[in-house]
Length: 82
Image 1: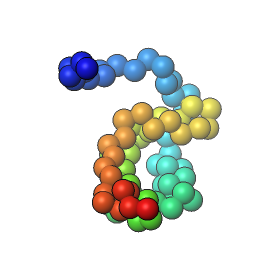
Image 2 (image 1 turned 90 degrees about the horizontal axis):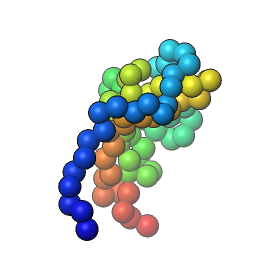
Image 3 (image 1 turned 120 degrees about the vertical axis):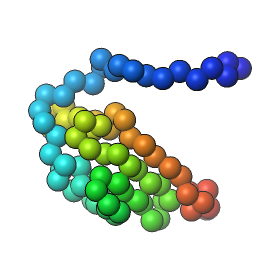
């Protein structure tokens, strides 16, 4: 197994066609059970998933579709429970 860690410094595949409206990001996440904790950080209490750093440079919008390209996420103990 290759234990080398690589970083992505450029992603040419997802192209924004318009500016991202952070209210659209918030609405989308809330509709899917996420709660805004602060600024651009969200938490799903039932799934135990934390999403952070969801600002307009890390969530691109392509033809009206949100593209989460640089999301920082964490899993809590709740995630591993049945």
